[in-house]
Amino acid sequence: MSLAERVEVGEYTVRRLHPSEYWRLGTVREGPFAGTTPVPGDHICITVVEHTETGDLLAYWPAMGIPHADNLYVAPELRQHPKVELAFLGAYVAMLKEQQVTDIYAMIDEDRPENVAMARALGLERVPGALYKGRV
Image 1 (cartoon, rainbow, N blue to C red):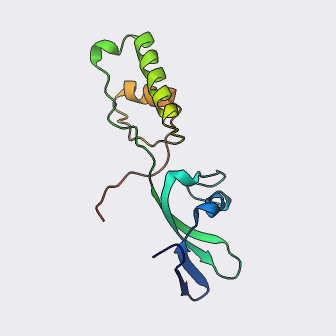
Image 2: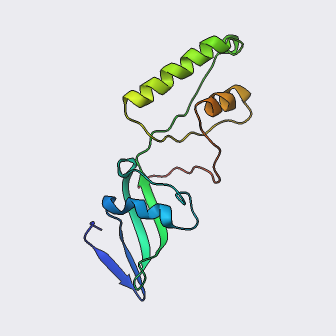
């Protein structure tokens, strides 16, 4: 399906959302983008279902190109040195900013308190749901 293609299903339209319309995701009352302003560069494409008459978005499913901050490892002997961890975190944030990364996702092993602490220090918040992986 290209950006120009639309599939009409009764009173609904299924189509790809053009990047200039990504702001509309924040207008949906519920869902992970509610109340936000998604950045077009964070998404490869977004397929939506909208009501043909009103234009309201009723469903969306983005394919995202957001970096994942996973596989954090801190050696046991380093876990007791907050200044080193703080420097590590600072270097990590600087790297992300240098690459103009605005959003990241991470899977955090909650059984490892040092990982949870590092994620929180980075400003990550736990969100509902679980990450699934698959091949297309």
